Image (cartoon, rainbow, N blue to C red; front, side, top):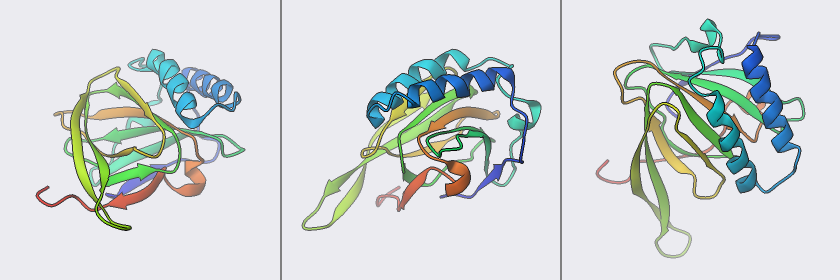
Amino acid sequence: MTATTMARTAGARITPLAEALVARTRAIVSRALTPAQTAELAAEQLRGFLGNPELLTPEQQVGDPDCYRQHVLHAESDGSFSVVALVWLPGQQTAIHDHVSWCVAGVHQGQESERRYRLVPEGIGAARLVATEDVVNPLGSVCGFAPPGDIHLVRNSCSGTAISIHLYGADVLRLGSSVRRLYSPPEGE
C-alpha cells in the first residue's frame, strides 16, 4: 500500500461523539450478523456522525505531508472492530487493495475519489484486474462492503484536506491496517 502513517497513543483521548460512534458500532457488531449485513447497518449509523465538528479532536485531523495518515480512534479489545480517521492531503492516495474484513467509509470533510475494480478470470488460476467504475464521494457520503469484491483505490482529489471515518471488522492496531492484499495497476493505468 502507498505509505501511510499510523497515530495512536495509549489512552489517547477521543471525543464524546466518537465514544457514541464506538458504542453504536459495538451494538451492531454484537448482533453477529453476516459481514455484509454488519457493513450495511454500520454504514447507516455512521452517516449521522459525518461532518460534525465535535467528532474528532484537533490532533485527529492532522495529516502528514508524505502520505495519508491513519488515526486509530478505537480498537475493540476482542479484535472485532476498529474506528479510524484517515486524513488525506491533496493528491494522496492508497495503492489498489482489498480488505481483511467488512469495511464502512464515510467522508467527514472534503471529498474522496475512488476507483473500483474486479478480478476477471483468465484461464486456470489466473485473473486480471479490470476497473469497473470511478466514484466521487462528497462530504457525508457513506459506502460499506464486505469481501470479496472490495478491490479499490482511494484518493483525495480535492484542493483541501479530506478526512474520512472508517469502521473495520478487524483490529487495525494489531494488523497495522485493514488491507488484505495489494494489486498491481492494470495495463494502461
